[in-house]
Structures are given as structure tokens and as C-alpha cells.
Amino acid sequence: MTRLEWQDQFSTDEACRKYLFDQRWPNGFVCPKCQGTKKWNVQRSGRTAPVYECAACGHQASVTAGTIFHRTKVALRIWFWAIFEMATDKGGKSALTLSRDFGLPYVTVTRPVVGATHLSNYHGRHGTSWTCQRYSSIPGPNREGQGPRGGPLC
Image (tube, rainbow, N blue to C red; front, side):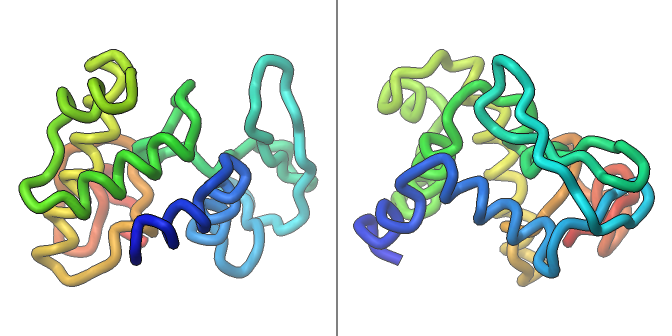
């Protein structure tokens, strides 16, 4: 994918959220707690991204929960662009370089950068796609085919 194609596809936070939604729930929303399929969009004050609330059990889920973007205050389009830069740069991009390029504090950049690096390294070795990875911490998988907390890789 070229830079222009990337910019066109992920030009807004909404487009990035839609991509994450489609990766997490390819057949539509499924509650991680009760497997219910009906949801309500809940817009909480002070948040830009909606939270999905299961109509059956009331559990709230978001497209970023359990990912390298969990609880981020930085716009998703910036994170998507940073990951594109890391993936396409011949020598890779360090967290320090990305923090300078995007005007973000170094500490803010480190977690997603380390997470994306871990995912690309792990999935490069195992020939799988990192975009559907759902996990809650950065360390590597415990057993073949399982995420760090025993959950599925995809």
C-alpha cells in the first residue's frame, strides 16, 4: 500500500475505528462477556470514541480495549500513521524518532511502538496477520497459538 492509499483509507479517526471494529468483530458486534449481538452506542462525556454496550448484559466494550491503543488519548489516525511509518521505513522507526516526528511525548509513544514491534516480530515469525491481534499486555505469547493471557491470537 502506498502512502497516498494509506492516507486515503485512514484519513479520519472514524475510518480507523471502523477498521478496528471490522477486525475485532468481522461478523458484527459480539459481546465478549455473554456473546450477545445487539448493542447500543454509548457516547460518554469527555470521550471522542463511542463505547458499545451489550443490550443483553450491559457489558461495555470498545474497539481499542485490549489493544496497543487501549486508553490512548492520541488520535487513532496518528497511531495508524506512526505504525505505517514503522512498517515501511527501511531501518524501522524508533519511539524517539516518532515522538519527534509527531510532536508527542516519548513516554506516550513507547507503549504502542513496543506493542507494534512485538506484534510484527511475532507474526513475522509465525506467518500470521498482526492486525487482528487482541491482547492485554505486551509480553510474548505463553503457548503456541495463544496470547499472553491465554486468549486467542485472532
